[in-house]
Image (cartoon, rainbow, N blue to C red; front, side, top):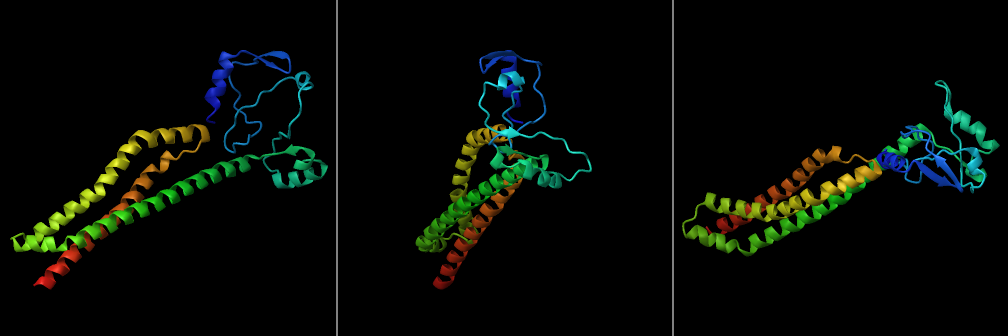
Length: 240
């Protein structure tokens, strides 16, 4: 878990701890690997402090946690259904969590965060690409007669098309460069924070994200260039 190293550091720096007025010594120098109870952060174990029963008598109980280990051939759902009538539910102050429930919580949260990031990022990408394409098409339409003037001055079709291509590349490349610089300095740090404290490994999908981004952005770029080229070509044919 992502909080393991913080718990380990606290264990080394604080060999003694006071709980309920009693000073306790650490039983071991290493942190136990078992997860006894999950906290409100669904996929992150903040750590559990195990103390003698004599210490807990002066503390106020918040929740009861049942720790069991099923046999390999046991049906966990059947066991739980039999235990609920005798008090294993929220009404009686008990709560439980199974290993498969923890896995479902972890991967469910991972999928939700990934989906939201992809959805929000794709929406903003489509909006920005559409605005860039609209702006470039508008500029080409407003200056279409200038391209005709260049042709009359002796510029060939390839030169005009090359000029259109360079203009479109520059127009689309500048926001991409700015976004790249921003990502290089900030996104990496943000990903490290998310992976460390939420234990969600989003960096594994960075390659797919880049490919999807370039595919969508490149499609808008290509469509914009071809549309601008067609506008100039149609105007050229009308003048002829």
